[in-house]
Image (cartoon, rainbow, N blue to C red; front, side, top):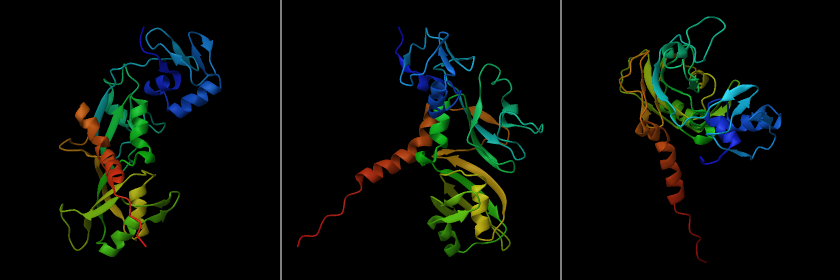
Length: 263
């Protein structure tokens, strides 16, 4: 007999949906185990012998998850399908997606290129995408001008953007990629990942982002992958994504508490 696993976790790890959404589906009576509707969210199942369906669709949870690093080109939408017939990121994974339900982790805008993760692991995708994970997404951007150090500091302090509220840069620095009197290259790290966030942040300062490329997620770098290319991720690659978050957490724990002054 296999180790029992909580039903909501089983559904989330199948890539079908998040664990929170799985709880909602269970509560709504949309989930069946061996043909019987269940409403108890804490129930456990035997993944080898129990048959789980959600809204009539069979759910399979396998341990051989797949993870890909993909260099998303510009003018490609970060969705699994597109009603307008535009090219999607899964068009590059036609062979790999025949037997698996692959999907992108997070999103990159139509006119943004760079590192995008593709997987069939819903739990992993939620861990990487959630702002609570505080995993930096690092971008290299070309601006139509040269912001001052004071202006860049404003982005570190935090600015309010349309339909996004207050956001801030985890770090920001000038890149050595090259510059001129007309433009500047800036490297910026964010964790929120809101719609067109980087572009809106610089627009707040009065600058237009001419080129935008995501070059890293956590400590995992895009490297030499060319637009349209992808490769399977190793366990070491995956650990790099969470490495910076774990390091920050350790630093917070080790930070000494201020001593009270003796009177």
